[in-house]
Length: 114
Length: 112
Image: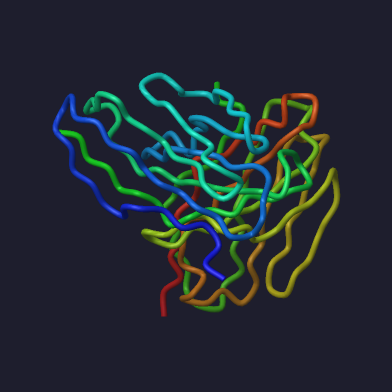
């Protein structure tokens, strides 16, 4: 039982390059999320998918796109990476979106954009 | 002003000490309060979860919510080196689009 799995673990990009961060969960959860974590800023929501087939913007969606491929998988794409996107990215899932359903996080992707 | 404020630390305590970690918040609508623990280079994991005011105990951990003061605390008794981590508070209210708001985290080091 792996929980939430993120790939890759580390990535270095040059400004303007694109990449896709992959996330998969095996807990049969309906809701999935992408966060970024920066020193002094805490965890900020980029995009979320409340259920299969839906996606919505979070606090900091600019420069990102997402795809909810199926119930298990939720990917995050950077079309043209910028140094401001250097961060640690976490994928999370929950049974449903809401206060009574805690989030389960993956171990993150550490992205550096030079 | 951030909706949720948390002292970043670092907080260093000797093994066996009682640790108190705190968050203050400005939005009185918050209903559900959580504490996550995050080890270095890992994702956050849920530690404690409480609804509204009061205390909740789980082993060496006690979560306390004081809605009148907009203040939540996590107490760790008999702290161990394995408790060394960053502790994040988080809170949510259903009327706010189910938006989970995190504190920035307090880094705790428990020394032998």
